[in-house]
Image (cartoon, rainbow, N blue to C red; front, side, top):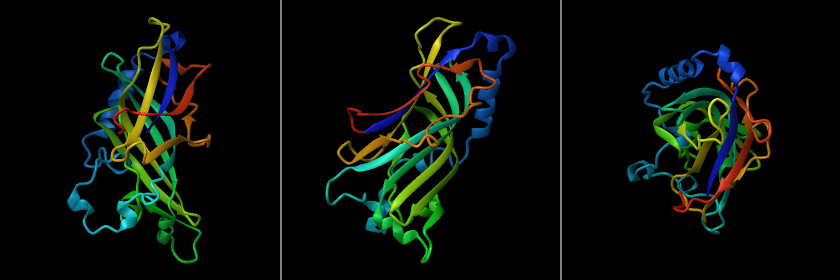
Length: 244
C-alpha cells in the first residue's frame, strides 16, 4: 500500500512579469543546501537495514505490532509543503521543503516513556533502538534527492507513536498538466510507500488532521505558479502492483 499527495498548480502570468528567474534561483539554493551530506536519504526515508544491523535487536524493534495476528498496520500519514523550490530538467523535476508525519499504535512503545510521564519525545536515531519503525520513504525522488533536516518521535501513554520529519526533496511527478504555456497547469506528486512490507502487512491512511496535511500560505511566493483554486491539494492511498 502506498500514499501520495497531489498538488495542482497553475502558471500565473502576472507573476511571470515580476519574478525573473526565481525558480532557477530557488532550485540552486535547494541543491546548495542539500549538498552531499552523510545524512542524505536517511531516517524516515532510509534504506532497508542489512542483517548485521538487525542482529541483537529486540522483537519490539524487529517486528511490527500486529505480526502475530496477521492484521495489517494502519499508518496514518500527512504531507505538508512548507515551500515550493522550483523546477528543473525542463520542468520534469521539482524541489520542495516538506514535513511528513506518520502515526500508528504500538503498545510495546510505552516502555520508552519515563516513569511518571505521560509521553516521551526522542530523536529518531535514538527511538529506533527501542521502537519499531515502518520503513516508509519517498518513492518518486531523484537519486540522492532527499535530505533530512530534522526528525523526532513522540510516544504517548496510550501507545500512539507519532513520527515527524522535515525534508528537502527533489521529485519526479506527473507534471504534464492540461494546457499549453503560458496558461499551463502542473501536477506535483509526492509518493511514499513501505520499502519492506507488502500490502497485506501495512496500510497507509490519509490523515484527517488539517495541520499535518496541506500547503503553507506562502509556499509559492517567489515562483511563477499558484495553487489551483478548485482542487489545490489531495491526500490519497493507492495500491502498487509490486507491493512496495
